[in-house]
Length: 395
Image (cartoon, rainbow, N blue to C red; front, top):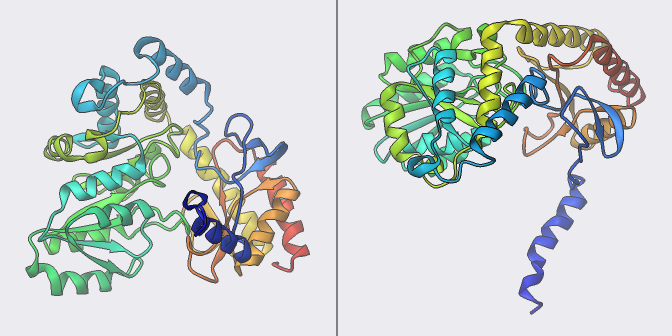
């Protein structure tokens, strides 16, 4: 037997990744996550970030983060339930609740652990969780951690959801229906009004993961619930503070009862130091900016429309996106990765996404248009897409 510490079993798995053509090294960014970046030492147009509103490197957010460090220090120093809960965290929750037009907001250190912490805290044995088949990995992990039974409904298929509700409702104490608000790989929006109506008809609770709706949909980025005017009818609205908001963290918005329970049972919050004050300070500033004006969200949607129209005119397949997420669907995995590589060689960074993140044969590059892009940058990117698309026979 070889030396056990050589982790030979992992080396074998890494070789398999190389054989499949999906092995990669982490791209390295020198400087802020801007519309144009220096990536692996060269300047390129960035169409891969979730920084929808251009907030990640915004002077106002940076100033607020620095001010918070001066007042509160670099770290919170403890979990919230012991002595890590600072006035700045309380202030953050208050402004988020006001922004979301909900009773209360409970913050987490990341969107991922918000889903993991909340789902298992609000369900138990004897309950049933119904989850859309395209829900995010963090929902899947949150559901796995719950002791409730689980069932998957076909993507956005309300007939299938109702079928399950009809047959299963009487067997369970509580039913929780979970959906992404905006689906991150296709950019389509969940049929939320229909989901809420079914939930009300069958006495079920609803949970919306609005990671890609926060700061994007609704009035000044208030999210998918606001977009459909469903305030007060969705039990749990989860959002991230790391995408459009530009910093890091996650939150769940809902009732005061929800807040009270989570403060006793949300494991990531009970067992992990809370978010640094600098993050809280920057997020508060971002929310203030969104409450002052719709200019950031207006610019985002204007840019997305501009880019989509030009890409569709060239004959690229952008799927059924209804949001600034613009997938360019290539199909074959190898061809998708080659397309992404060639775009990068020509000065546009847009990452290839293949199985297991998306189904086999639906490989795509996912273009993330932001409010920070200029029309010139987007037009230049479209030119590169056209050149590489023609060279590869994609269009």
